[in-house]
Length: 338
Image 1 (cartoon, rainbow, N blue to C red):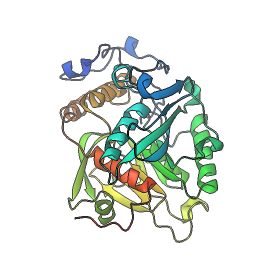
Image 2 (image 1 turned 120 degrees about the horizontal axis):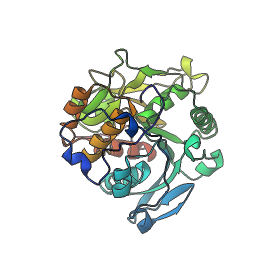
Image 3 (image 1 turned 180 degrees about the vertical axis):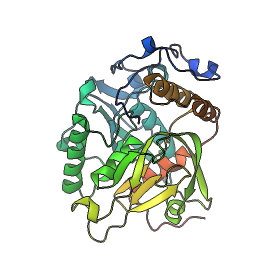
Image 4 (image 1 turned 135 degrees about the horizontal axis):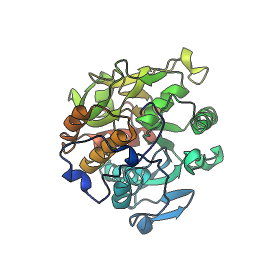
């Protein structure tokens, strides 16, 4: 998330797969920077197994299995080439979680409702009643500041607070912006990195003992794609939560990196967040970096080039998705692994 709060599109990446043909990033001409307007054209994939409207999309599971129902709150739109090829961030995450669910034991089907909530860009904020029957929610990443004062962000915080109070059985998950805004909800401190620089590209995250258990691994690290300047500077506590957390609640940090000491938060049977992205691929990484360059957010082009060079590396996003599904199914705690 960059400081201006202005969103823009890249006019350089105007053809499918163009990101593959840009070995180095360059700053855009001023005439290239334009406000972004969300489009609601359904992708080809959306037509296969969704019901869609201008206000949201509903994805049903593609396998016959026990179903996890997730309400996805979309807080941004991808690069237009990505939107054309792969759909919205919600669609991308639906397929990512469906793949992870198929490998769960026993297999899990994933059903999602997806609503774009940036009201100042034509979205809408759901009502609490719409979450009835869902196991939990997931908040996507965004180019907006989670610590910002945009009205839609305050409305989102109000919605999350109502759900937290009224639905003690409900699960809260978030990625990047979602990680930060959930921390803000519970009184954590969110802001720009102390050095005001970005964490970009394929990064190593050192796991805490809690992180190793959540991801069912003996490895010391996981590897995920990063794209953020803001971060959670101080984790929430019972005292900071203004009564949302019970006195005996433990808020765990599951991982840390050289740049960001709080890479994810975990509250047993209640909350799981990740600063890093779990469903980015090579083209998405390069295109999202270019969008931030074009908007003026990223100014260090050498840093951007180094990050782009790691975009094709394998990452552990499926492990993160699997951990989130286990949270939704109440099997994230007390499980042994080899």
